[in-house]
Image (cartoon, rainbow, N blue to C red; front, top):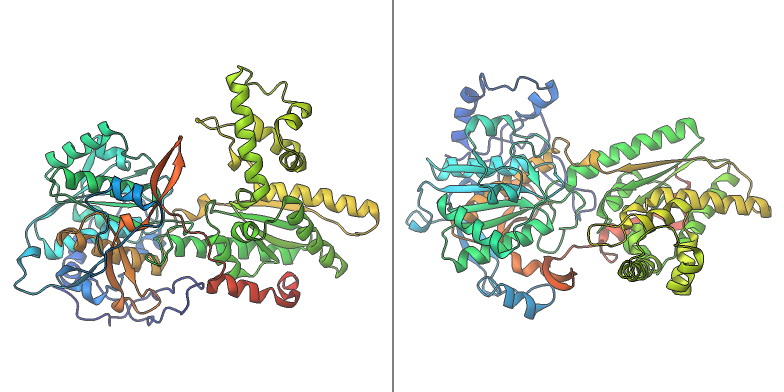
Length: 577
């Protein structure tokens, strides 16, 4: 059933993983082949007459791309547990008590099954799948395609149910049976429109009981949840509950994250990061080309990634802008708003003196969140405004400087006073459903641009700066969520779908499907199931500690960041553009 090796020619080279990885991807540009021989034989016949009514030439051509499959996933597999038990990231007592069945489970590796192994016999399975989370990621469709291919190759007669609209589709028992024609139409396509997605979670006792009932009524053997940190923490909760209720359904997560915050020692890369980083790099590169053509603007570009600056770092390594500001570095150095403004103003003044009144500054989306003075300001504002609410005085009128100076500590009031009037108003007026200040309203690229302009005006008045400063602001976020997956993401996500299917058929539950060795050829990638409990920590939510998957920030001791620092040496980076 399985192609013996990845040797057939392909018009699309298998793309490399991000430049921030230690080694380059070494796959030949002629190294892609059909993942499953049986699928390839029947595919041409099925595709005839199944073309969507509206499809561009690029989309049609991309659909023919055939990912290479890791060697171990071309055969029937079984789960081989490691000898060591796992722990968690932090709060062990809380995590162990919340997940008594799953906690401590070992990592499992998928290895070829013996022909006599009846535990993975080719019986038909009923498996559900969910595209979960509020942010789609390139490659989500290929995860489902890989899961479908595994079931068709190794469990003929199986049924794959796609729950519509994310996890709320599970609670509503709203699903569509995914047939071959539907799967074919979505191969190598961006977005999550095959079955839709959503950010809803299954959390309350009533919701968990309903999920158990729906899984039982649908006779599910497995549920595969393709999502980010919150979705996979929810997958862990469902797996624990299903196990406690004696359900046959195995729950397996698949890591997707546009901003890369699921990167860790166990997860080399989440689905979608490679595609997003390449698209953002193209956009930033276009801005840089325009910048050197017109030579009259500074472009302040904010890149997606509130909890981690992986995208800003990756794009900076690919494009080499004049300056990149990362939240993790700012936090480590205890940077202040005034200090950051001064650094950018120094760059502008230096370049103006050299006759270059233009440039590009990259800013991570979460930069302002990482600054210690801003975190302190937000904490104090939350408390002060909550106290006003308790006094039934929740109106913007009356929030004078006198009231703020008395309600906030001197450092917090000083930080607040630095903000432009629009940013101050946004912090005071617009709060979320829980009454908290919405720091997302602080558009870091616009905030920095306005403050730098004021600083340069001050320097010009003092005679220490001569030049012209015109600024353009950009935020690249939605643009990177749904592009067609890069060759790397198309291959990687398809292999993760195959691995998720293998884990379900091997009886693994409460695990995250992962692949090791991504800097090597895809044929050598090693599929594993990492216990979701080993990725958990706890965060304070609504007054209590809640188990959540730890979001990995940029490692300031890691090779990618060290590479960035080395390129800053001698002032070469600011003068490059």
